Length: 461
Image (cartoon, one colour):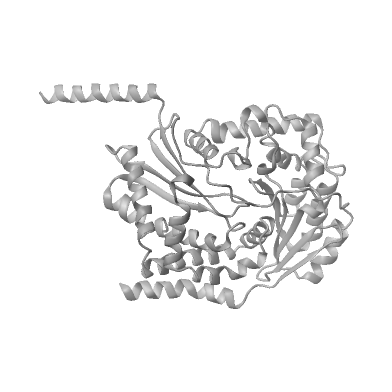
């Protein structure tokens, strides 16, 4: 069995070492108007991915304007001075491509996948909406209502999503991370068209964006096209954006959230650094996450799910790709008869094990192989490569950090994992939530259970 594990590690690490030895060719240049361009060559097929990353997300919204970044994302598909509403996506589709966009706390990204000969068209379309977007009052109200309906379906009518949203609001108080990306419903309803126009004028300028193109391209073919279409976009004024920072420990928080869930849950989160604030700790925390929840042999699965029988399901994760505070989270659902207090204690006991004793060499090898192999498989996709480049640059990190990923992860020692557990997973950085059904539902459930038990006893007699 030991031989099998060693062989598996070698097989998983082989593509990683090959990737490190043959780093893909990536070009980095900036236009006169401030637009940064990254071009990565991948000549396996005559296709390409284009992503335009704006350094703005819901984190940057003013108080009372939550959801504005996401509504503006919708408006980017509603037409320009040259294109009617919806015509952008129709053109992309007509020539065999796909397009979409996403908004996060830290960035807003627009992307297209296409046959590489269509690159001039894709650049022309994207440059057009960077420069010529139109926002009519009627279209804004229509898209604002679409977003509100999206929120209703995904969050308001989904008890688990609603519970997590309320929990997340407590984890990073006083920052843009305390509000959901989609926005609070009451604030969404009050957004006005002029706010979207001001947001577009402020943030959607070349100097606040990075264009990433990955595929069957070269710099010689891409650079003249980018200059042709994006070079005529006025530079504008680059917005001032706060530098990433790790907030001071907010103090321990422990709450009970009553939400119409079917089963209770425990959520635990710790405020921890990100790759933008503490790069070395980012890798150690990534390894810590894998030790706890990195497959069938990970500690949560082996000790809690299969071992103790205290939980029916549990997970751990680290969100370290952000500008400021990251989160290290754990969640679990108790087995029948297990209290939430017992479940919280069991999760904390697993963390205490890591605080008191570093993981073993075998654990580190397994986790490292799993993390690295997952990244290699992700990089097999053109979209995954573009995502990595764009995300790192937009978060203020050198994109070449991607080429150093394997090396940095290999430098993490068991003592580093223990250190970050001791340093960052501490009470003053912890938020705990007990997610339970509303009191009326719980009492009804208890009455029904008592009645059912009485009936069963009567049948037995």
